[in-house]
Length: 78
Figure 1 (cartoon, helix red, strand yellow):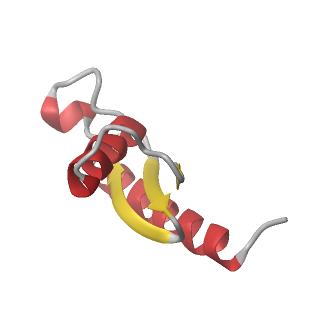
Figure 2 (spheres, helix red, strand yellow; figure 1 turned 135 degrees about the vertical axis):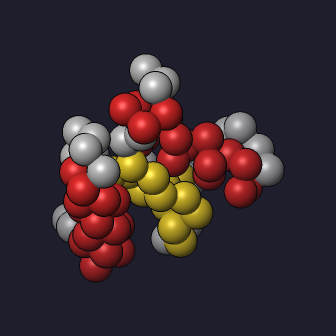
């Protein structure tokens, strides 16, 4: 079942994807939510950073780990 939080998180990911498109990137955005709270969001940045690993999901997970102060993203959803 899709929750109101799921819809809100997807809307945030879509907004990130729209930013990526406006910046000339492949339009992908990602959000990391833990226990119902957004802890990180990002978009593709491969072209602007000249980094083949700068995918939205990886950037968002790295940011979430930094925000949470741990590498395990238990109870988190991307």
